[in-house]
Amino acid sequence: MKHIKRRERESSEIRRKIIEAARSLFLNQGYAEVSMRKIADQIEYSPTTIYHYFANKEAVVRELLLEGNTLFLQALQQREQEGRAAGLNALDMLKTVSDAYVRFGTANPEYYNILFISNLESVSLVSLFDSGRFKGFELLEAGLKAAMEEGCIIQGDVRLIARSVWSMLHGLTSLLLNFEFPMAKSNDELIAFTIDTFLRGLSR
Picture 1 (tube, rainbow, N blue to C red):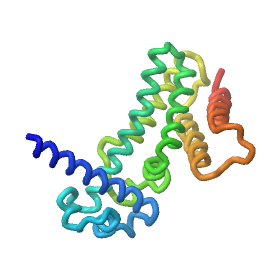
Picture 2: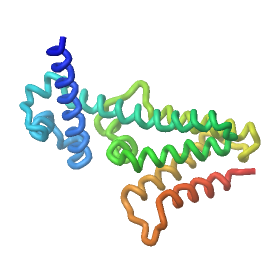
Picture 3: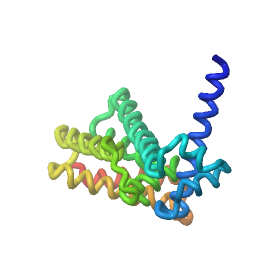
Picture 4: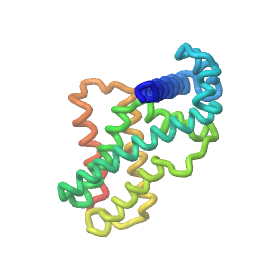
């Protein structure tokens, strides 16, 4: 029994090494330049070992995307649940979910890059039936609709407004990941101010 558990643990560790190596290679070299052999070389295993865990490069990409999408959606859903438990109104819920988006990106820069900047899902032609990115956008749409119904923000095209908010969040997150603001007191202050100012523009 202990032998079986040890093998399962070792198998899980190797699988994790493969995913982490692939994530780094895809970001640094691009999808087209990465091969199963390069992934194997990165972790000093034979290509045969890699194929024991993943049938091909697309299978590695799928695993990586599923993991990133799951982490992203969980980050938003957790903050939404915390907001509901705290009894936040619809507008404050929008602020807390928006903050969760940015915090995910700054805490998980590699996954954010894969999901929203290099867009590995598109370039690899791996299509996810159940995308955490899309569900995250739907969560934002639902929050905006609730805010409209409560009279917190202006009435309008929910999808258009959601795209606008999403664009703001993506721009802010990308800047925080790739650009150091001179004389900035703290990222926390910038995140809160940007989200509050943008959503205040939608307030009634």
